[in-house]
Length: 408
Image (cartoon, rainbow, N blue to C red; front, side, top):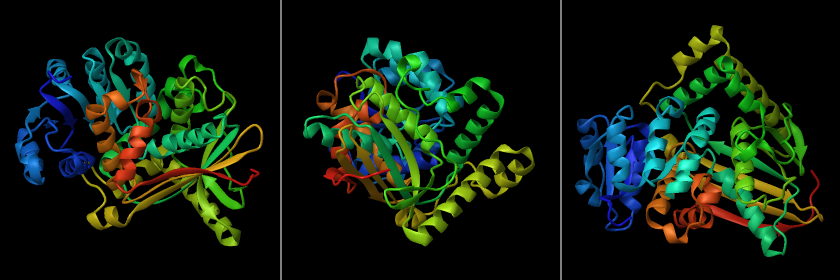
């Protein structure tokens, strides 16, 4: 798309995570990459740009309101790739996705909103396949670690002659904070589940993102701690969304992971009595948090203590945060594999800015190296090994190896 004015447009550059993503791009985009910052307020865009290093001083500023279809069309038509941090996506995202699909423009976001992803697939997948646009949702902590982790397990098994997996589990450990944008998206999804039967049905359906709605074995839905390969595991609040993304990846890849693959995610409590105590505490906190957000009597109280729009974790929290996802899988013939995806930095913000920024750069600059697919895709099916390599270059650890047999 050399005839387009920009390689990459960052829409929502003035949001909390948008600012972090803009800084990542300013520090790591190759020299000569044509980046533009977009949002509703030119003054705030100029403020963001003024705080960025290097070549960012010359980046164009584009005034774009997501409710202005003409402006969105002009912006999409002028760039190879567009990355959006404008949420909640259920409220603001569909016009952006539609504009990119119409103009053959690659797209990335960091949504974890299941209802929005399903609606975007229904609205734009066919059009994007016709125009060649890659529309890639969930390019942040939702759901890059999960999607690339299972991708790595499959690649390791395939290198031994068979990429089919029978069962896989992720054990997650993380430390970080919340932003007002994340809270708004979370509350919006909670409200949608409570008030919209269609969204409620999506959350109950493990194949909600699978083309045709048919797939393998639903993931485990235990609500209590369990033992997993010698460790205590608690329910993971992000699992209902992440597992559906992985199942879509498997389906889009022609069920290469195995049509009967069972995949589940957990919080890693650790070993022994201490691990059990941690798993019990995480389970209780998860249940109480979900109830507090869902019940009107406690919703207002939760809203007063959670971050407001525009707020987010301070620099110290972002710097000292981390995430570590460990994956274990077995094949139908009893072989076992372990994978790891981990990084320093607050997972939802510092690390997400890297994941989203590198996803956007891959879409903008690495087209010939990417899988030959278009339409509504996932990080693994759209970006796969290219994104894994980019993240390794930014200090992430991603690997997978054969291990002695395990029992779940």
